[in-house]
Length: 164
Ligand SMILES: CC(C)(COP(=O)(O)OP(=O)(O)OC[C@H]1O[C@@H](n2cnc3c(N)ncnc32)[C@H](O)[C@@H]1OP(=O)(O)O)[C@@H](O)C(=O)NCCC(=O)NCCS
View 1 (cartoon, rainbow, N blue to C red):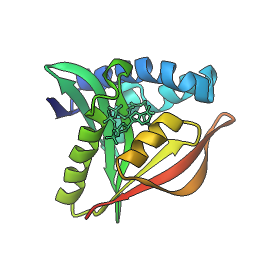
View 2 (cartoon, helix red, strand yellow):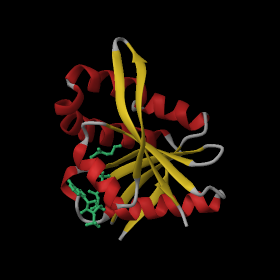
View 3 (cartoon, rainbow, N blue to C red):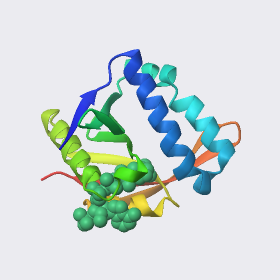
View 4 (cartoon, rainbow, N blue to C red):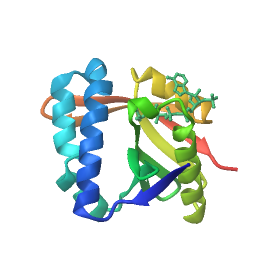
């Protein structure tokens, strides 16, 4: 059984920073290259950056099983949808249904907020995760090219899941 703990303290933000480094360096280096991974980790997933995102409306949760942190997620309420900004599970815990349980948790949070759609963005070449999202009920809605500075872009699809 997994549980979701809202990240509130600097220790929580540091736990997420470590999870992000571990997951992103392995998963994203073949997709976007080492330099962009280092740039994005510093810009978006340092403890300080996470704290600033939380102050601007993002909500982070650490995913734990028997007190072991196995991943994390971040959501942000928007006008008509809940934006799933991050969902990362450590490699050795993937394919065990935890991603699906995390989406079910996010769906319940959306409904509590009165939001009937979940929106996310995923790198176009992150094909394993796109497959996972499709099997969880997301559909691709558009392509997005986002300039993130220093010559880097996020070359993404937007995906959407409507809640009944
Ligand atoms: C995407 C991710 C969060 C999914 O979590 P997970 O715990 O592995 O997913 P689950 O075990 O709950 O699987 C969910 C569904 O996706 C399918 N799936 C999972 N991994 C898959 C893969 N590599 N290829 C195809 N389908 C896959 C599962 O079969 C399952 O579908 P089913 O119920 O129809 O069998 C996780 O794989 C991950 O962290 N990936 C790397 C980081 C990443 O890219 N995150 C997303 C950023 S946008």
